[in-house]
Amino acid sequence: MRLRLRHLVATLIALPVLGLLVGWLGLVPIGASGGHWAATDWFLHWVMRNSVRTAALGTATPPLEDPAMLPLGAGHFEVGCAVCHGSPAQDRSAAALAMLPPPPVLSEVVPTWTDAQLFEIVQHGVRFTGMPYWPVRNREDEVWSIVAFLRQLPEMDAATYRQFAGLAETTPGAVEPPALTCDGCHAEERLTGRSLIPSLAGQSEAYLLDSLRAYSEGTRASGVMAVAISALKDEELPALASAYAERARRRQEPAEAKPAMAELGRKLAELGDPARRIPACLSCHEKPDANPAFPRLSGQSAPYLQSQLRLFVAKTRGGGPYRQLMQQAAEHLEEADIQALAAYFSARP
Ligand code: HEC
Ligand code: HEC
Ligand code: HEC
Image 1 (cartoon, rainbow, N blue to C red):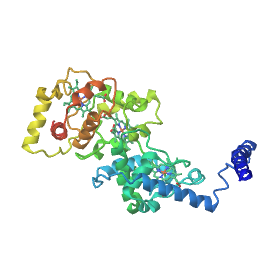
Image 2 (image 1 turned 90 degrees about the vertical axis):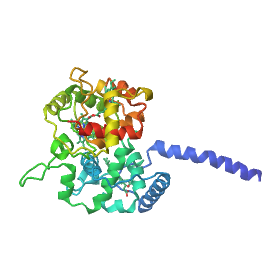
Image 3 (image 1 turned 120 degrees about the horizontal axis):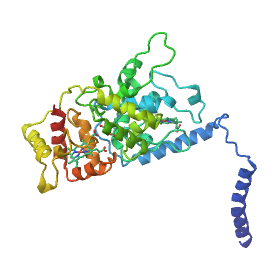
Image 4 (image 1 turned 90 degrees about the horizontal axis):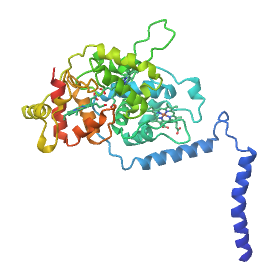
């Protein structure tokens, strides 16, 4: 009995020492070119699938039928995912295929996952692979738009994909494939009254610039915008802000509001509700002599206004140097107020 125990202790000490020795001598192959053994490959995927399945157990899936999620999802997919996974308009690059594990063709694997599982993968990434996590926290709404798009991907042909993503058609004989620009998402003619993507046309230049800096410095959290501007230098931002500020905002179809809701929206905007400590929105917004860093809200799509107000109420919106003012203004808004205000401002000329 004594002898056995001694052997056990000796083995327990020797094993990690042996492991360290093998590591120190450089005997563990880490080159990717050899690939994994079939058994390793199977085991890693098995662990990954089990892990995602368990992580997704408590995740409730919101409704994903809103067609406005598709331009946002496809646009981001083009900027942030297609480099590795390819897309209906583009095969995977040789560099992507040389990754270990290589990024799969998503239209083939998406049907093997549930919505909640796709959400887990896109939100948190996959450890020990090149699969990145969502670059900001607290923007589950953005990740769900990607999931809504992924769900449609297996059925999507190249032309439909290009249209959703805002990619121009390839011109015959063109050497470079068309690239997605800011206008792929923000062009006025691509937006509707249901868009989740904001209109930038006619917005205050100071506010646009503050917002771009806020995204790039991380004081305003949006994974979509963080990725979209990641390749830009700070010096390039002012020109973009001024170009959009000079454009004319197109009239979108405003959200429908029942008379009682329209009345609540108007009252809160003009007078606020002192009893509930809600200030009059128009005391800051839409005033010609106000601080130019206060954004214009009129004619903005109602779903976008709602999403931003919900983020302010949840204290996760962030923003530019004056964000604290808006944070306080929104503190006591309830869901009914948010819908009424979004309807009011979307319909305001
Ligand atoms: C830098 C390359 C890279 C980028 C960018 C990337 N991925 Fe991935 N992704 C991978 C790799 C590698 C895997 C394989 C993981 C594995 O085999 O377990 C993967 C796996 C996945 C999977 C699981 C597929 C499966 O069945 O194994 C999904 C879903 C996915 N990615 C979606 C996305 C989406 C959506 C985006 C953009 C928001 C994205 N990926 C961006 C590299 C990337
Ligand atoms: C994939 C689509 C997409 C692309 C590409 C994109 N944007 Fe955006 N943009 C969005 C979305 C969605 C939002 C709202 C993000 C949020 O919730 O904060 C946004 C927000 C903004 C805002 C803040 C607007 C406001 O009212 O607060 C500015 C400014 C902006 N984008 C500028 C740009 C510029 C400049 C580019 C090109 C470098 C660009 N965007 C590329 C989708 C996109
Ligand atoms: C004390 C001034 C002030 C008051 C009052 C105020 N706001 Fe704001 N609001 C701001 C500022 C400043 C910002 C810009 C925050 C940033 O830097 O992103 C803003 C931003 C917003 C945005 C985001 C716009 C976009 O394009 O993303 C919405 C929506 C908004 N306010 C709605 C309202 C509503 C509705 C009310 C009334 C309940 C209101 N605000 C009251 C100052 C104010």
